[in-house]
Image (cartoon, rainbow, N blue to C red; front, side, top):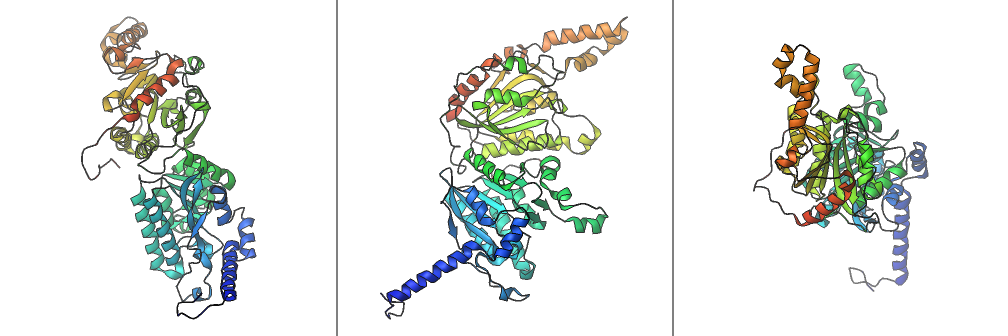
Length: 527
């Protein structure tokens, strides 16, 4: 045995070096100090390695660059050069499939990003893209490392560039487990899904102190950018949970519904729920009276495998539902109007929510099922001035641009432009079905009668009786359940109890669908 200079090396020297390596690895595993660990625990937070252990299959994690240290000097950094430089990077498996991960270690420099820290993240992102495997970031950092100046800012630029490069290529999931302020918040915003934990995670561009100084407004960190704020008000967070353990378990569940990359299909499982199971309950769930609300979630539960689905943005824009589920073991994306909230109308936020979800499904080869019960777009000055035309066009663009199998089911109302936008046959739905309770029309019968028969109603001896007669006539002539079917605008009118089996047979037929978009660099979607 010899060293590089050719001189012999004693076996005991090798053993000594190996012992030294194991000592260093143990130091890396334990982190900077017990005091720092206890401070992390006192905040109700897990350590970075505990989080990785919860996310990945047991014993599957392989770390990359655990011995990396910063090279910066000045401002006290030269005296403190801990291993990992405050971020743990590597790969492992979730349900046996490869997943790349990086986790900020708040115990080291508060998880702040410096040059070495950023370089480690860049490397693991590059590996994830090259390997075609999902990337999960466990975020718990104080932003850019001020002592390293512009080098830290450049590190963020490299992350943003890679987030964009990976968009639509591999699933990217951001898990917010601590603070995320300033420019650092833009990386999660570029990813496909954002998870947050109540009380311990916050996201904002400018913190409460800056807000107070500039506007005079007093607000807490959670009030400004906590999990509930972003899950209900801003729509930045797709999911919010009470604790880290539940949050990370749900990340694992989401990964089980996603493909490894855009060249693969989502993982299919053996379904125990019979494909030909009928849904008798559907006959009572949806009232024939278009003015009566009901919970669309119960309809979804009756149709999908074992009633299980993962709702995305559950608490934001609640008038539309976006969910991932399975039909006969195949992953599908479900977009559905929710009559229980704002009567299921489309507005600015609902349009944005559904458009982004549809784009995600299309990017990752997930068929889209649309359940329609929509009375139209929400009227109002705020909506018009807020750009409902522009935002509604995002939803229209997303559907028209999607090449995955697309199946629509009209349960009840489908009025006006909202009907067209919600994946009607005219914008490219592969198959469109309707229940016998459907009403497809330019607008509701009452509004239509008031426009068409305004003069007759005004001149009648009994205007209300005349209006009622005209409404009934309009419904009979133009809104009966088979009007659209007679004109080929729906492929069939189906028995509601057969919805599940019809969808499953249709998905099987569309499994080999191939659709090409025109050759172009990229489209220019409405913003």
